[in-house]
Image (cartoon, rainbow, N blue to C red; front, side, top):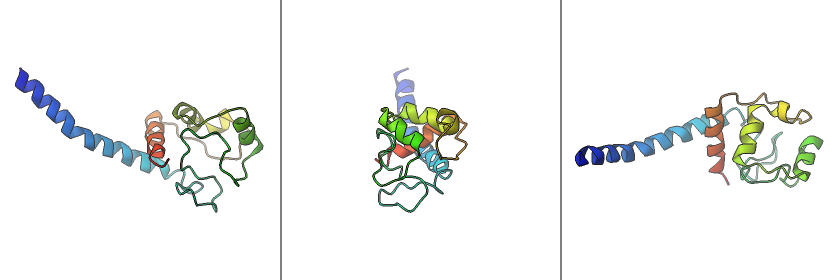
Length: 125
């Protein structure tokens, strides 16, 4: 019984890195939907969307020098912070949550894909 529990624990420990790598890969794949407008490089300023480096925990409309829509600037002024929960809601339906935004992206419908994307974005803080 002890041997079986130890074997299960070792198997779970050995499987964890593979699961983490799979989730990171899923997040990187999900980010491909964003890459035409957003970068994960803080120095990138030539795209139509702001950098997403450091997005988790950042106030909305906070990248200096980026021309945010009035709706996004208003959301930031009202205190919207891009927590994981706020990003999860926004990415599900950006135009539904913020109809006046200039981001024309339809959203990431799959909740698991959104979670993987947000976890991936956390790596670029």
